[in-house]
Length: 396
Ligand SMILES: [Zn+2]
Ligand SMILES: [Zn+2]
Picture 1: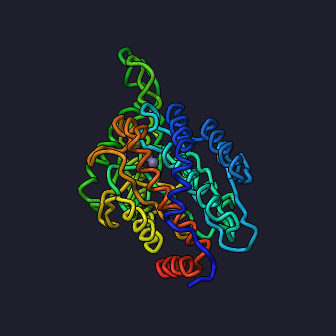
Picture 2 (picture 1 turned 135 degrees about the vertical axis):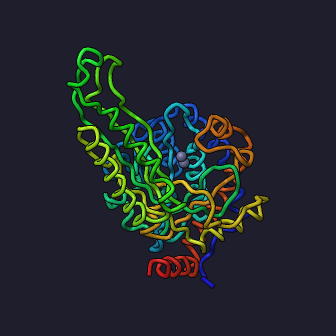
Picture 3 (picture 1 turned 90 degrees about the horizontal axis):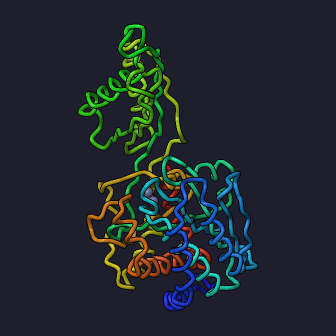
């Protein structure tokens, strides 16, 4: 084993207990000021202020995104570069129904605990503020494109949920807008002079329903009408549908996108309108969980009392821009139970759960698990080597 000293779970637990009041204050401050994707200025401010006070060198904005940040702590010796990711965007209407306030405050607390326990650590501990995860924002994809992750050896975060899990699959997802253009006319005096873009949108959505039985069972096609016309007495000249197309792999999702394009073209042909399909954000790639690091996280939180379940490759899945990062480096994205089993994500119930003392107790446990993985990656070369070997094996 390594001659470098690593931090014990006991030492990290003690640091996190000491950080708890600030962690709660930061989390609740973000929770009560929900901000949508790429407008998370309050969250950026409370997080970067805390990290700067804790001795991190803060760059904000970062990677071309106004509400991103990079906070680095150099231990003074060469070594691995480990990143803890902080998400902090909220949802329209439901606020912090995804509990990102806990990801952000718990992630920052984990990183600060490591540098307090190991002030002269090798390498760097970095907290990367990754805005715009929800609504196809793809903040992490944009930061990766801006080379923010170029020198990162592993990226770690956890996510609140209705159960403890060391990991969960994530689907690849394409984010599309299908815009139809027709011809406006008086809806009663001379409707035959018009061509309804709304009729095209209806036919398109029906076409998707007709396709549903003939796509892989793992696929998800779901959307909303974002523009259905302006007034009942005007034949709608414009209509638009926002659609997500998801499946187990980016290749399968891309193949489904081609079928969606054909359905849009067919609906346009039938209604004498035009269809234009565009991407509202980058494709989210499927998620690869690094089992070496996820199991290490699970061991720590299990020892602290969490009833954490194993990775279930067949479990229910959403999508996240963490998928794209997981194609670039070893990544973990375990789940922390903050609400009763069955509480849906993106709900008002989950939003309320994300502000409770229980949620913060659990976040403290998760932050300890995260801090232990960071400390091990920095100080035990075998851990990073094993994580890399798994990543490269899975990539090949
Ligand atoms: Zn989330
Ligand atoms: Zn979410």
